[in-house]
Image 1 (cartoon, rainbow, N blue to C red):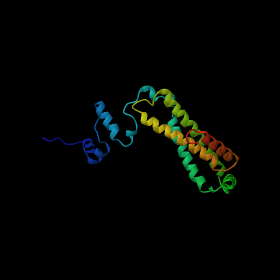
Image 2: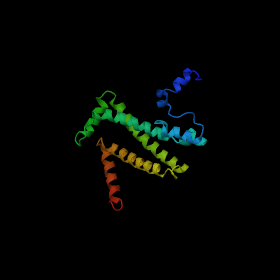
Image 3: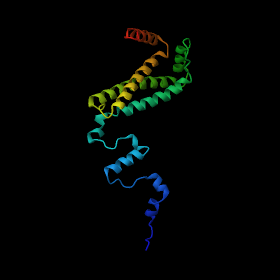
Image 4: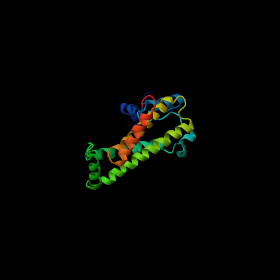
Length: 188
């Protein structure tokens, strides 16, 4: 004799439910790992995290802060790009126009500058924390290499940000940068 299905049985047995919830209750560690690995949002995170690693004082949210500042840099950079003229003759005057003539131009430029400086600090501190806690050790060597490359890219982009206004600071930054490059072995 067949028993009558309840509403919960009909919902959990439907194709829509199975497409959203692909696995049942994770009764073993393997099933827990399978749920994490097959979910598009959860697969970014590790299956197991040690209790001390969840404390804010362990990570200080430096990776998240770096990413947030990158988003602020992207948004303000796109807005500033509408008014900036990238030529040697007009770059300085376009910066002055952004500061004085464009509505909220000074605020946008300051947000861009402060988030760039904050991102350099946050990325450097994040890499220092990863190094001092030994988080670069196997099996995470590839993450460490990617992080070092992103640190170098952050430094290079921060350096080029000084050059765009083409003022005295940019002139001396390019002078010092080219002298450093000239003194480097093999390249210089």
